[in-house]
Image (cartoon, rainbow, N blue to C red; front, side):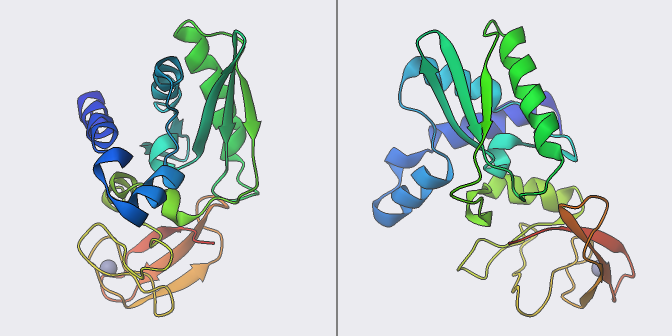
Length: 202
Ligand SMILES: [Zn+2]
């Protein structure tokens, strides 16, 4: 993923945000990506949104839905993030990166709060994020309630199995509840025999 592609993806999503979508979908979109209304806050959000998940560096914290709020209180910037998994050790690295990224863009001394409630849901992960995960070789969690997921064009039915990101087969089995990191589970595909990480759904 190039910086240009990343910027384009972000631009597309910002441009297509809530106002364009009607009814219940707009509510869902707002909840999933609560980009602030104020212009200054939005510019700070855009800076914070460039921070990536240290474990899956193709995904930004905005793609993940981890970035929840950017507020300005007086001359102080306050950012809320919600980890995808309450024991996720990557959250400390993300917090440090948000503070340093804001500082290097002229906004030093930001506070980053880790907010555990409401808990992160897979619905907060953007479609672009799901697609990037899949292309990275990690099975993406399905949006809650839809039973549909997998940007490679397939369906992921959580009750039935996890789709192999390499060949698309549903014939997979879990090898370990913990994959390369505690935020992922390790699966193996019984068709192509490739092991893969599954981004935990919970
Ligand atoms: Zn496979």
